[in-house]
Image (cartoon, rainbow, N blue to C red; front, side, top):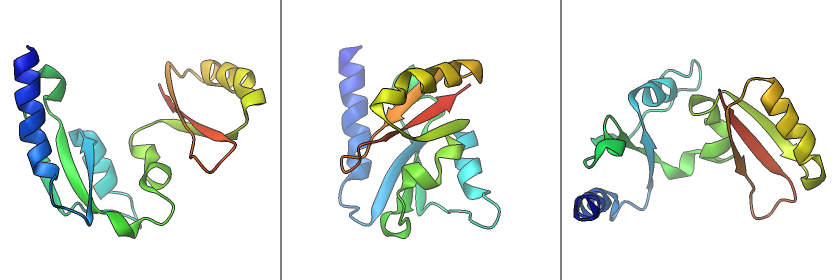
Length: 127
């Protein structure tokens, strides 16, 4: 199994090389569709490549986007295609309250994102 994962990693990393103006994002079909159908603000990938490998990579793709087109950062602008809700600018002292709110809203999974230059972080929620 380790050999299969290693071979898969090498094959997939080869696709990422020498593309300085492209940002690779691992997506499934519904996430790619969401990104492409964003109403007045759709984004179109430069190219899309199927991932190869073990079961955890099934039905996953790497979509390459122009890296310089997103001033606020990809995570912020397009997070609604990957997560159901977001709570922004949470301070460390407010974590307990935010987690209680996440649980009350029905969030079963949550992820934290903290930029290095900020004292606050964002909580992304997946139901």
